[in-house]
Length: 286
Figure (spheres, rainbow, N blue to C red):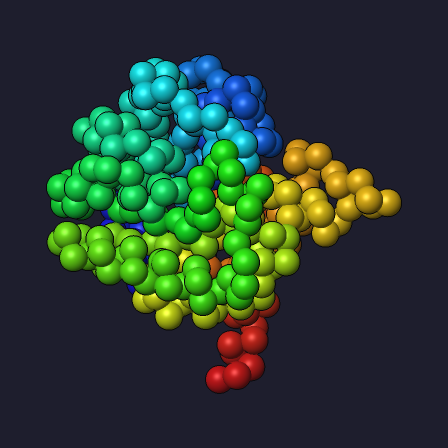
């Protein structure tokens, strides 16, 4: 299976690691650390040294309660970084829901649009469909960032997420977008309870029925902190490395083709261990 993007056909025969580059002052985990163009590009280069297969660059925080960022401010943050990142020799993704940012990024040669709104903003689907080649990641989000955790989903979350992802991919294909361009993200933490997030992980293989590769984004999420909390106190986001790597491995074991992570080096190392075990297991089975 391959993920077709603007410049690259990404082979998903092995799990791919998407490194997170937040060009923001307020992201939940690393806000402010890579807010300047120079710092963001230095971080891109570091993630590549650590083994990242894809760079995901975003300029607006979508943590619970985050306020929308004005268009011009988002463009000012991400465009200088994207302009240089597309020269680094790997697929580059822009993390945005604004069609104007998508179009400008694609005009620079960006490979993938990663949209938490799954192209539901007016004009977004048309930008992707009109490009003709870029990859796209469609994510499930309940409500919107300002209110998603105030009133999370109810009921059995897995079939609801599956239905949304199936329909969204179908709608996009109806606009002429080839299936090979589409990846789906269940949206861990976006309007779900802790139990619902872990239900999506435990039953993640059910989401493969949508017929597209799955991207899992568990890195440093608050649900991990809730589970590993000691004496009722959850570790801060930057101290959730170990549970993040564990969740990434479990996601891959349950069929995820791409994992979106902050801790690239550690995730890459863990995936090598999983690969070594799987190779031996497969030889035994044969």
